[in-house]
Image (cartoon, rainbow, N blue to C red; front, side, top):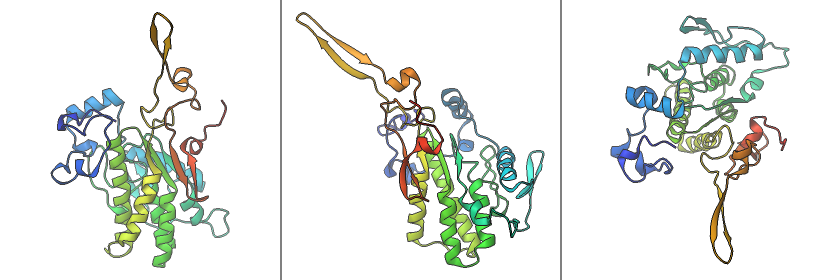
Length: 293
């Protein structure tokens, strides 16, 4: 959903589908993170789409607030500095007799709205500088969950099971297809990083990576966050009024667009998977938007 790539020819128009041949081989560097784009392109996307990426230290501050509310105490994963943080390498403490266990933390749902390259979910690199962040010092919401899994799931099969549950518990949506692709790549590579960190550099099986990829394809999706539909899928309804002497075309705009009612759009509403219930549900329900029509 961007015209930034139309110079590459047919297939790269704003509404074209991103297919494997368009972004692999000699064309593998066409889609790149924001920090690798030219200043001109960055400025254009700010003006055109309001695209502004958040530094990792800001993401950390906000993620820390989420965890402070969940744990009831500050500085759980790290101690903040002015534009950085110092990682707490002690095992994350859960009260033995507490109502909330490490499993509850892993299962707690987290959503990054307008996720861009998903810097709140995963922090492989700082989106504004491009600097790589070591696995042990990452601050993303999924990074934190996978750290907790590693500290508590000692058997390999238990780690794999709960690492997938951690992945199932994080969601994100994005308008622009290229950013969504980067977000999915970042989550996939983050899982791979944590797997290798846990299993002494070993690579996960192809079967496991396919499972992980399927989870990611459901949990990070393309959506207009104001309408809850696939971007630009709402259309005017066209009717023709004829009489004996003339005919005229009547365009009726999408009711949801014209009345600002999120339940009345004629576009394609997005669906996601509720993994705990094993159900396909409207994305709008995950965001807590009631059915007040």
